[in-house]
Amino acid sequence: MTRSHAADDVTRALAERTGTDARDWHLVFKARYGMQVVLQALAATGGQGEVVTQVFTCCTAVDPVLAAGLRPVYGEVSPGTIALDPDRLDRDGLVAGGRTRAVVLQHTFGIVDDGASRRLRAAADAAGALLLEDAAHCLGRMARREDGTPLADVSVHSFGVEKMLPTKFGGAVWVSPRLRGEPLGQRMVRDLAALPAIGRRLDLATRLYRTQLRVLGRLPAAVAGPVRGLLTRTGTFEPAIAPVEQRGALAHPPMRPSPAVVRAMAAGLATLDAEEARRAAAVARYVAALGDVVEVPAAVAADAPLVRFPLFVRETGTAERVFAALTEAGFRPGRWYRPALFPGVDDPAVYGYVPGDPGIATTEGLIARVVNLPTGVDVATADRIAAVVRRVIG
Ligand SMILES: Cc1ncc(COP(=O)(O)O)c(C=O)c1O
Image 1: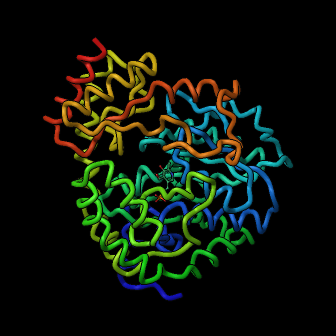
Image 2: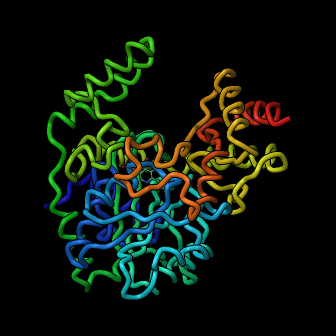
């Protein structure tokens, strides 16, 4: 499949940002489909097995594992990074010749910790597993080796709803050139390159998305829900998370974006530096105002361009009070990732998730206490948001 000029612009821009080769980047309709293609290739070449990931995530990050016929297993996250804790993976059978096919390195909220990531890489290597970097929250940023080159085998980036750019749709997958000579890498690249573009109906839904959101936002909640459901069922509205995606499946087969989505991705990338600077400035204000009253993950640098600013309060009740106070003050606090496998799944057993599993007590403790603040705001707004949080915390 030949790439369009706009697609070349996107892959070139991603390559420039990351110091990689544009040929190693592949565009997908959403990041979740990139993960699916990669994991399907893994299952096809390496056989069935497990993917070690975390429940402190969105269900759409685990659906691809199930869609590929692999089994998700959940490790503990580190409170300092909200990524899998490399020191606590022993329970997952991460041993050479074991069942683990991939380990997910998720840069939750855009927190990238090279040191911890390298130790996760070592654990994946010891198991002979693929290191799959989920950079959905930090478009164009990757964990690095000591020599500055990308650490992961595959890195997945999102242009989707509530991510770094206002693009709403689109994803990109980087496949390490180290895999070029291997059947697994060749299979991934072949399958990614052969993806069909989204059809006309879905393309139309992407074009109507903003207008639909505006209209739905003006309707009373009791009406908006059913209208949204109807539009979703008829394929007129493409939700960020479809009902079926809370039941362990994905809404569509893997596809690449339409030309219109690709053009939006190219235009969005041109604004990413400014977007990162704005978000980094808000993060700096939050760290300064809140660092002494709430728990902030240790790996949050004071100038990190995070997609949301995470904080942990003492207990769920306080998190709910912070959430309510911010909402009442007219701000948009986030609940990501309370509950686990956000926004929650119909049947955790389908996901192999056992709520209350003592093996992920740290993760569940963090989920109970998390609140996240918007970073796409100006510093004055960040200050006002921080003041509300401080008032509730007391
Ligand atoms: C951590 C994480 N990974 C992957 C995804 C999937 O991204 P996309 O919406 O582009 O499919 C999301 C989306 O919410 C996410 O939060």
